[in-house]
Image 1: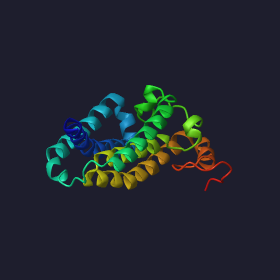
Image 2: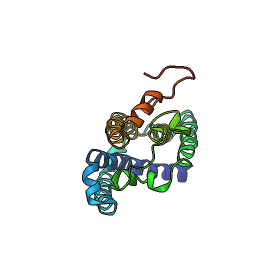
Image 3: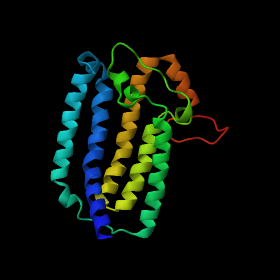
Image 4: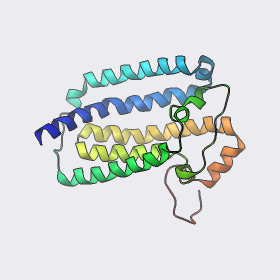
Length: 201
């Protein structure tokens, strides 16, 4: 149990450092997509990845005071966390099966030659942003397993930041796909799956 606790402590520290950097990555990409397209994918990813790795390193070096408030490893939170984490992983697997690597890596956003293909079926026929949906379920589950105050804070902060990312991404998708994306947006809910027969607002 002591070894497992140490491993979870390290993973909690990594999440504390990596999650803000992952959000920063897409916040740097989407608002400035036209600039990155002119620069090209290789140069764009090199610059953005370097900035995000610096962010990971900076947070990692100051993680100790952020990890002092620990609520302990409790069976109920671990059980809930494992269930959520596995649900998020299962959902993510469904999403990943629909994506080729270039789409997964965000290359269409950075390539000037092609707008890519609008995905509207599978998980993308349930919600418009299934990757964010699965990620939120997974990181919430992981936060419950680790049970650190600041991991909860980072997960909570990711919700409004994630919403901003969705707004920016949808603006960029409208530029790329126009009326096709507008029709898709009217038909499929943004983030929360609807019950069968329920109208999309």
